[in-house]
Amino acid sequence: MVDQSAVGLSFTPVTARVEPGRLRYFLNTLGEQNPVYRDANAARAAGFCGMPVPPTYLFCLEMMDVDDPFEMFSALGINLARVLHGEQSFVYHAPVLVGDTLTFRPHVTSVTDKKGGAMTLIGIRCEVTNQDGVHVADTERTIVVRNEVAS
Amino acid sequence: MTASGDIKAGDRIVHKVFPPIPRHILALYCGASGDHNPIHVDIDFAKAAGFPDVFAHGMLVMACLGQAVTDAVPPTRLRAFATRFVAITQLGATLTCEGTVAKLFEHNGERRAKLALTTKDERGEIKLDGSAVIAL
Image (cartoon, rainbow over the protein chains, first blue to last red):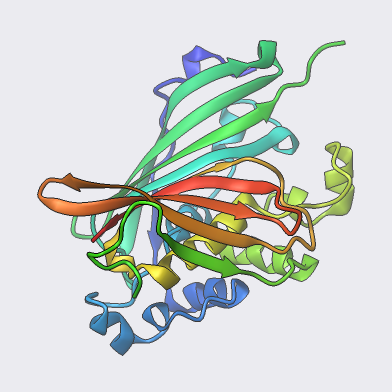
């Protein structure tokens, strides 16, 4: 089981480029037709300097370019089959645009046992900066681990 | 563009219904998101983990909610977006995303609204319970 010693642990920073083809695949998968994400002119008309990414795409970028997307789970000894996503939040400070190169720096902020140890909630916070060093966003997620209770 | 300066608490400004989620979308979303957890595409893996079948990525459902939000609010005005994943979203679920204005406030001189967001399936079961902060 994950314990308090995990709090403060940080993981390998992830560098991810916002590639137009991959973004289009994401938009197509979700049936996203909003022209602001697909048409440079519509994006400019909406006040962006380039084409922006949808609100949850930061989460994807963090996973797509990493060598081991489940590094965190293996580092903490968590079985992937026992993991659920509990909460996710994004705070946006500046636009993220196609062509940007982002750096994600995740670390563990909290470990909380629930239901008498049947579940452990792990809080992970991630600061996101772009190629110019601009702090563009903060993401936070809560991972729920369904612990294997000894019988 | 719904989110203008004349909105008030209680207004429903986000509403979007999505088509049923087929297995195919879950497979595509693995590649689209980089989240390759087999629990969303491999029925054998899902069953071994104690689930009757594969189920949707929470982030796929949150992406639908995000789409519903930015259909109503230009993305330049989105300041924050958060959800709690309340229940697993099954295959075939027809999702309805809604958002109402919970409160109006000011932050560093910017007029903002906090939206209360939900995503429900066709039986009315809440899948995501969330919020967004938008600039007015």
